[in-house]
Image 1 (cartoon, rainbow, N blue to C red):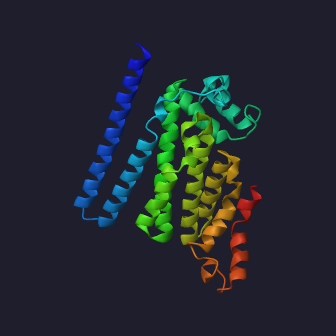
Image 2 (image 1 turned 135 degrees about the vertical axis):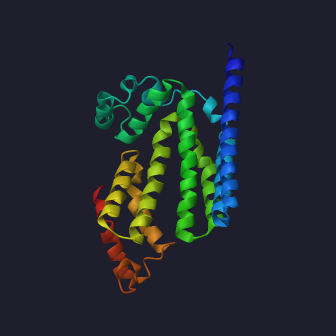
Length: 269
């Protein structure tokens, strides 16, 4: 089979998968509308639009191959991936810092899983990156809708994230799995933080620390996240100027309390 036939076959499979996903989302939306929930129906159509936007923007990504820059270190010539998700492979993921100069075991574990599923078929790795990016876009929409209560404004922010050119490298470059994966844990940490401040408790705080730690184990750039949480406390959560942080409405006192609340996140750095 020549390369044109292979490309046509891949393109046909991609169109089938995309159409199946769109049909599933439309069926879900219709079901929600039949149940009489306007808000859920609105959220469903927003999610559908975000998914379609990502698929249209990145439709070529699954057809790309590995490239010479770092992909050989991460996947194509990385003989450690052959151990896959065995104890030997998992131990290597947590011990290695020499392969690419970073300690990111969660990223290695995701690539070990991809190798188990796809071998050295680059299309599978690109599909994984794209699916994680789509999940991140949906996550961001629900995060801002939860914080602000504004569905369409939150959808606009999520759409910017979905289509912004700065994300192209992270989505279409296999070696940047660490970026899309760390973004997922970034948003997951924000979600657990919102749950924690709504009903503070030991279990929710442990969940917050866990998701933050997993994010650091995907990419160390999450060290800035505690500072972002402080910004969110100012807006849109409004915890800095109110007594919601446990103070008496004194901004300076509340700020000290909010920093103290996050001391374990700062200590992890």
